[in-house]
Length: 392
Image (cartoon, rainbow, N blue to C red; front, top):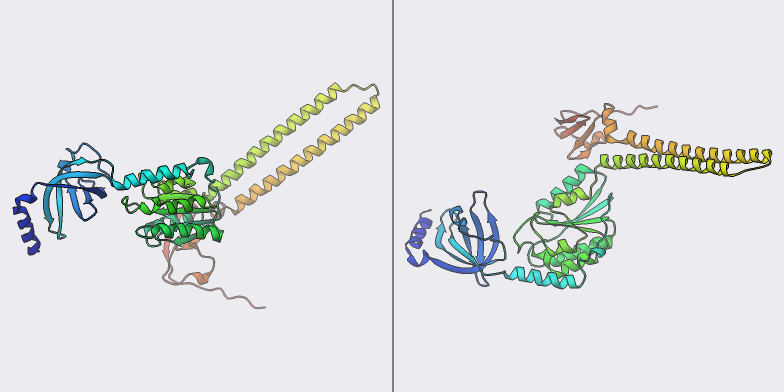
């Protein structure tokens, strides 16, 4: 656009805009893979976009981060493509910790003194929850990521999504209300509190005291999954567990069915070993007692031996019965395992990650996935045929 080009020429010709000193706080800091950094420099009255190209980044001997207060030297330019003026930074000096960081540390110390972060207050995350509540925005990618990972690993887990504002004015109040609401409802075994990454301002709702108090007061265990792996909020410190990403939180609450079966098999194997060991110890104890007992009356000794033998036989019978029951449980679990069913030559047909159990659940033109024991087949339904029930 000619107007933008003209304005940019006017700015370039103004000597006062070629060497400008600005002081402000860094927000929305992002470093591009090319080595160029982008951020916003702001004070209480205004803000301006800033960019530091790779060649100048090499001369800045410190790590720039959100909330940091800087004095920068640069040239004001117009980014013609977007019609947005910015300062191209050529040098920068830090001025200490920004306001947000100071507020963060002050509140962190205050809540620490109140015992909100004490390890003994944290609740254990259930290993096999039946129901998971997800508190997050219903418009972001987080809710889809969490649902997908849980359903992929264990479709038997019920998921309750609690749509909640997680950024901006009033977000902390909404987050707290959602936490209390899930507790009042009482169905969930664990709560995932999450959102995607963002600037320190974007994540600030998870640093508010009202949010931290709600998490601390929750009777249901809470996993905090806020931002990226390098982001930390006060919600992370007070939660019963921190996940580096929302996807990791989904993995924590959804054990694989195969893992559950392996865990049961391991328990059964250990039970067998314990029973065998106990039988051996009891047998040794009985034999030792028999050697220590001396009878003058042979008849009484024989009767005593018979009683001891009956006790030992009864004990062995009970152990064998217990082994048989454990073995039957194992066979039942293996027979009903999805993996076992597939190995028999059957297949599982799903549409949009839901198992098709009835011909009414699929229509011509639908895209379905057929799972076999060693792979998947993606298909389109060309036609369907409904079986007619036989009369008489």
